[in-house]
Image (tube, rainbow over all chains, first blue to last red; front, side, top):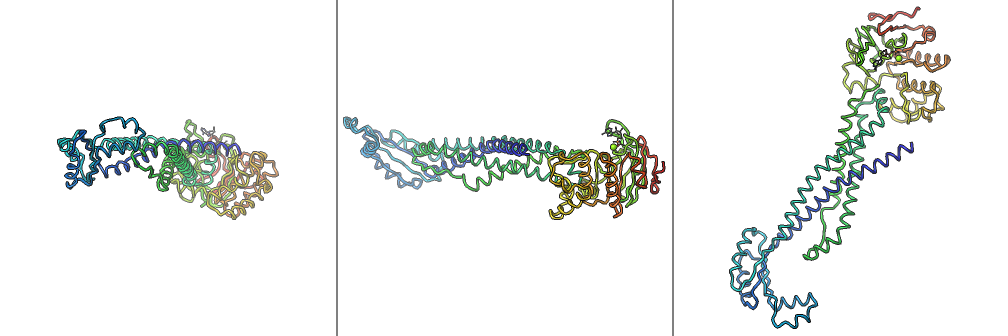
Length: 287
Length: 231
Ligand SMILES: Nc1ncnc2c1ncn2[C@@H]1O[C@H](COP(=O)(O)OP(=O)(O)O)[C@@H](O)[C@H]1O
Ligand SMILES: [Mg+2]
């Protein structure tokens, strides 16, 4: 009896771990995707162009004023050469080294924040126009990061689906195999139960519960794995996003997500159990 | 439920062995009948057919005018709930106590635990095993295991009681007690069939006898109650 229960506990633990890992990977990718696309959306809200002027050029204030009057421009921030140097010195300890310089090596620049409704093509066209302005040395469309994040988000989504399907099938099979073993172990008992008049539903029910038990347990394990993973990633992510003045706030890992994880696990577990029961119990010979 | 009819029943096992050949008989509702014959004559096979464990290769088996070979799985479970069976090899659950084994048919039928306890103890008292209720089957003698199987067969007060060599492992005194129990059952309306090759036991009971010989029925007519055993 004791042997039996400790075996059962060990089996449950093993199945929970397997199902937990199988669920945690795609779920983690989906979380990543959700957060990346949110990040991208936040950035997409203020796309912009940086305009750098040639050293000594005096065109910056004028261009800033002209741009500010255009409807598609939301705001323009002018950084003069002096301001650029001051900011630079504030952020570094290179005071002494730069004090020796005779001329200011930093250009004046404009940060042009455009309306969120502007398409990528319009943004590019605007950059082309700006490049032709007097005194402009360089124009940078700040979209590269956005594109990368979007691409990464799409990749995470794809990968999430692929892994989701693969591991979903894996979860069903794990549950089916485990339930089948449980059925085999109780075959004698099941035969006797059928003989004394147990219905197929009565025979089936405990095994379907097994499936739920394994699946939901696996979902719970996946939730634990994910929260541990997030905890481990929090510090490096904070460092990374901090450099973009982004405050780290991972979203999506909430009670609803955990419930969905449990429900998914339970559903896959039951699917496996149904499979096993169909395979084994319908051919149950009584004697 | 209780009238049993066999109409030209043949039973051929997948191995090709024909265990029953053209068996026709009628057992009236509320009758008690002995099924006898040499070892391998087909007694167990006949009972298995009544349990719907196997189906006849030919012919019909009617229980209360219903062809039991055509029962769906749902109907089958109601049919079996009205059937008590004592098996040759006990078929007890090794990991369950005597009490739980006997309680199985009642729990399967959805009876409440209070009634289950009452019924199980009544049945165990009848087979003289009340003090053994919390033991496991393997802690009992073969004869005691046999009696647990009998208690399980009668606990749900089935309309039909099938017993395959129920006294095979019991001493003569206990055998008579068990037979008396079956007879009480029969008196309150159950149709009872006892397969046995114990001639002295059968003779002592003065009940109709059906004899099989290599799968062929020797005594017992399809159109009336079987004749008495007279050899
Ligand atoms: N599953 C089976 N497959 C093939 N032959 C079987 C099977 N079960 C029983 N038999 C054969 O059918 C014959 C009748 O068996 P059975 O009904 O058990 O006889 P009895 O109970 O009268 O001793 C025997 O010869 C036996 O070998
Ligand atoms: Mg036999």
